[in-house]
Amino acid sequence: MIIAVDFDGTIVHDRYPGIGQEMPFATQTLRMLIEERHRLILWTVREGKLLDEAVEWCRQHGVEFYAVNREFPEENVERNQTYSRKIKADMWIDDRNVGGLPDWGAIYQIIHEHKTYEEVLTGESSSSHRKSRHHKKKWW
Image (cartoon, rainbow, N blue to C red; front, side, top):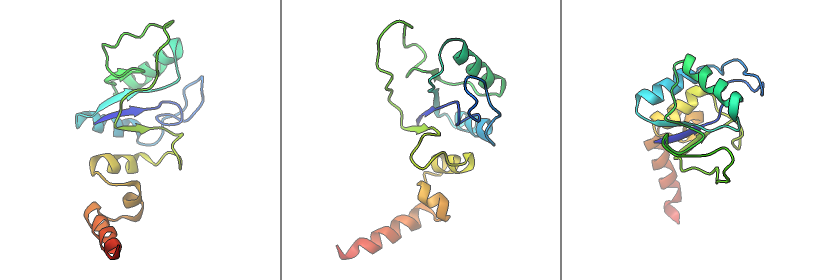
C-alpha cells in the first residue's frame, strides 16, 4: 500500500517551523509499516531547510521514507517548476483528516488488520461487522 504521511501535527506535535515532540508511537508504527513493505511518502508543506530538518529528524528516529514530497524517489521536481502537488496514494495519514488524527495504535489496526475506523472504535471484527451490516439491509 502507498501511504502518504504528514509531518507537523501527525508524526510530531505541531510547532512549525520548529519540530515538536513525537506523537506517541508515531515512529514505532511507521517503522512497523515499512517492515511490512508499505511504501511511505512524507507529504508535507515543508520545503528547503525546514524539509531537510524534518527528513533528518525522521531518519534519526529510524524512519526512512520511500519518497519525500513526490510519488517516487526518481521523480524530478525542480524547485521553480510549476507542477501539481497531487499524488497517487492509497491512504493519507494527516492531522487535518475529517474527525482529526486517530491515535497511532488505531492507525496501525486500520492498515494492518484492514479494519474501518468504526470497527476499531467499536472493537468489532471486520467479518462480523460486514455480516451484521449485510443482515440489516436484507429487507431491501
